[in-house]
Amino acid sequence: MTELRPDCVVIHYHEIALKGDNRPMFVRRLTDNLRKTVQGLGKIRILTPRGRILLYLNEETPWLILSERLSGVFGSANFSPANRCSTEPEAIEAVIDRLLDSRTFETFRISARRSDKNHPLTSVELNIRLGRHVQDRTKARVDLEQPDLTIHVELLQREALVYFEKLAGPGGLPVGVSGHVLSLISGGIDSPVASYLMMKRGCTVGFVHFHGHPHLTKASLEKAEDLVRHLTRHQFESRLTAVAFGEIQRLIVLSVPPPLRVVLYRRFMIRIAEEIAHRERAKAIITGENLGQVASQTLENLTVIQEAARLPILRPLIGFDKDEIIETAKAIGTYSTSILPDQDCCRLFIPPHPSVAAKLNDIERAERKLDISGLVKMGLETVERFEFVWP
Image 1: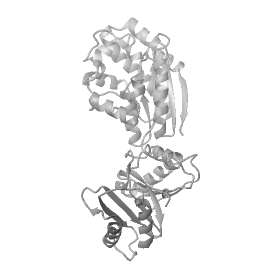
Image 2: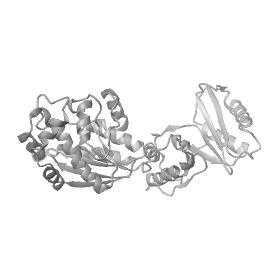
Image 3: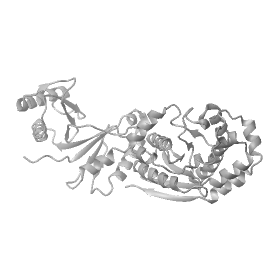
Image 4: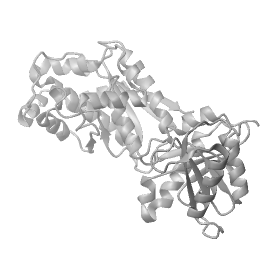
């Protein structure tokens, strides 16, 4: 008997189910994102019966490619390759028999759910019948706590779905339900993770990268491009705006006491990023800052940096430690790129002893020596834009 190919994918969501009257809007967005996800994989029909989303596959659908794509769709709690059949118990047993041909296990359980309450068997009755069938066929024992194999059966109105596996989705909310934000992305570890976490909360994310040109090479920009390209799989389209920041840093150095320079660099980055955010209609700025990691990220310095902003500055990593950020970066696939050597503008013209508690009065006094609007305009005049599309 040939192996039974899945002809359907069952996608379950969790957080979306808690949205009450707004749930249909969230489901529509998730469905739209799934349509983009399966582009190029042949004709795949998408249905949305209550509590789940179904992808009806064609015979040529490449399962490995599809499953890899589905694993990155925010809003999905889990997804399962399934097989469809009629709701008669005999038909369900026949599908189970086919799926069991390549399985070895000592314990199992049946997990049957009945959406159609008109079916002649209750969920409990179906569990008992299918359990006896599997026992007779395999001699395996029933274990309701820690079985080697769980056989899932979902009874819908016109068909039954049978599957064994639940593959983890990333959870969260569908990208696009929470508005547009702009992320300050470096070539380092933290900011790509922060961007990922905001996508997971349903935001579409634009990116801005500050590089040290003309005083450094654009190596960090190449890393930022790779990182944005990787993250675009979660939101399908991304824009990266690159800003040459090296000359602005040099002019700050000429006029500002060394301990204040790092905070001033960050304030000017925020000002320039806000202008870009307004052009993109972004509602907030995202950074990879977390409390106490470096000199500019003390509570005092973060407060002074925030003061330069009009838009909200969101810091998803504020309470993370470095190990937690690294583990997340590894899990989402950005770590190997982030640790490549580059010439980061954050290391350009850095004083040996930056202030860890800059006072706003001192910062404002230092900025009076600078042409603030002129430096912001200088940065905006260097802008380069890069567009990314996935898949």
